[in-house]
Length: 333
Image 1: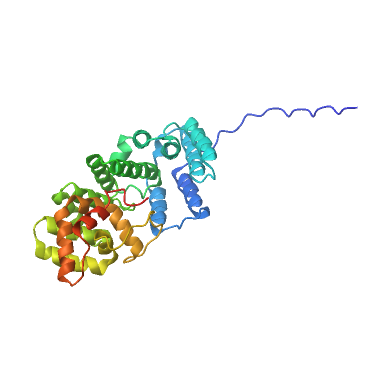
Image 2: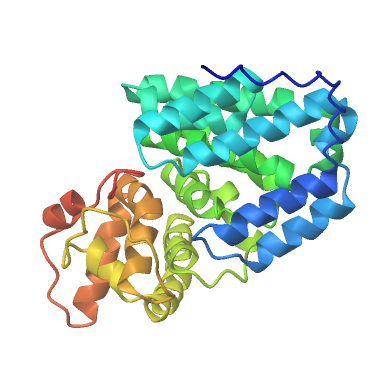
């Protein structure tokens, strides 16, 4: 005889979920860092401590709203780490059903579903707008100056960086500059390194005052990007003696940059994933930020070639050198 189906248990009312406090949200994100393959940096630890001690966006939400945002963010993290485009798309769409303003999910879909640069640009603009709505004007105003050290702010900061990169790649330089400037207002510590492409854009558009301010603001920056930008900035201001001095310092900082600028070395097809100060990889990343600036000022390239000749180096023809310098943001992929 067939067995009777088991008797269904009496339904019990589910207890309301405990509110997701700022501490719980920060700890959950920190756990994500620990189980991922990424290095947990001192900045990440500072972000965790700041998030634990600072007001959270979720503090102004009811329990259901806070839970929805937390669930959507977790789905977005899963989408970012998904093994296939189909799985990433599925998870991102699930996140947006839970929270339509989940920034990281919107960025995932921008990368997956945009068929043209302009479609991706529009999608990233929507992601940044969603982030502004999600954080709210009051939170942004009260926490301007230490973004990134608050984990709630990282999605919009990531989206802003990608939007600025997209604008820069499409030649919409002034809009890219405004976004980079806003990012430095929000986070003067510049954990994302946006001062590097911003410096290149200042020089490319002839904004020497902006370049000078940035060089002074981050005067302790020992990167090749700042060293070689200082050479160009000094040359364009007409102080050629100071440009010559800056050139000597830039060569000490990274000798490989000059090889690419003067066509004695060919740029690789892809950006390096890691670099060390003074390395060839750092030079490639430097050119990715400064190539447009040098290409926009041919007289500076001619001057650089003259410096080589004065040092006894037989430079390549000037036309060859100029052709070797790609447009900003299009150095390598």
